[in-house]
Length: 481
Image (cartoon, rainbow, N blue to C red; front, side, top):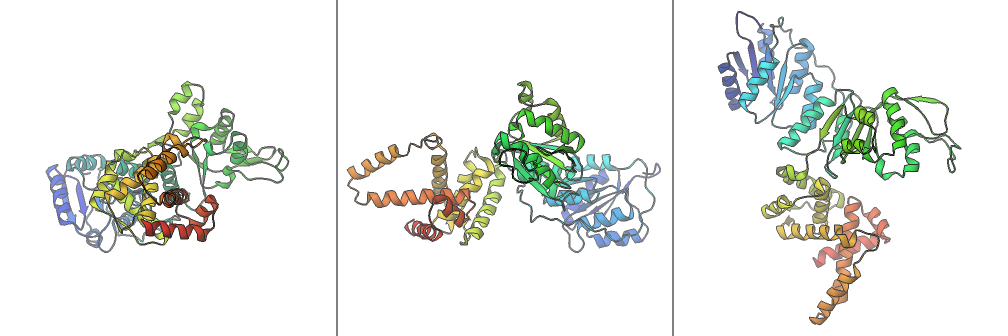
């Protein structure tokens, strides 16, 4: 920035109102500001010899996008600070911006004071040399995954997306902390998908789901004959993830003996298979997750402090669903659409009262609980428009299934069934058996479909019935409803 004149800032946005208010605020702060409605206009200005010291650009614009403009600007002048703006704060946008070399990502709508403060921090101490004409944009690494799975437009999720966008490019260990069902694996997958390791494997392992005596072999592999039943060599998850990302969920449940081995791999990138003598070298980025307070586990002697420090280079905190209720509608619509596609059924819509009922629920199971409820609604709601009554029924079914009476190994459902039957018989009901069978079938079907993500063949297998039987009962359940 020249000492003789104020810095020159360019604002690029196809929205006239955004250009006006942002340019006005920056001018009032004392800078020289020019506004453009497209990347093509910027290109023309650059070729005429004009030079910016800082550039704000929107992402979605007619013609060339802001991310394409960013990449071409960086190819011609890597030191130019560029601030990317967007109302669509998702992982793909933020990661694309930071991957392309953005100085910062500014979520719309933004506070003008924040934008001015950001400009002040971004401006270089001295004006850079003249900007070269736009060069061809370098190839962007292909995104090997499908569309973004993380959904949300609330401030907690915007902050999370910005953090993912930054961290995806850095080869750092990340610890994701959050309640059960908040989507920790989705964050780990996004970190991998938007990173330079995206073409490598993404391998996930829930350490709490593997028996302690098998976890070592699952992580590090074993040689043939290493123990009883080890008939052939087994390649562990670390080798499977070589060149990519290994996601270790529920890391707080890892046995102490394995914590020491994990620490060595994180520190040196090498290990021995169980029963092996060959030193295996791997290049793996480890992303761990937990719902537990690891600091408390360290104080209790149940988790190594040095391992925590290795894993916790950067910590991401997952917001609970109750802390971002405004995202419930978008999440529910997404789950209903996926369920409709999987079940080969018409898409069901949420009425305003139904959405209000969902928003009023506390969601102790977070996004996973909401997804299960949406599967129940997609499979069992009668009309194409879901009402509040349907939501309450789905929530009641979920609460009943998760309640204390059905949580243990000795399921006490005969008692409530007997009381219900007695009430119906005393009231003179004549089709008690048919009603009981209908409710039993409905409950079993919805639970199996929810647990299997709507996969009928798997649901039928788990219930011990044929797929045709399940389909017939599902159709009968819907017709009776």
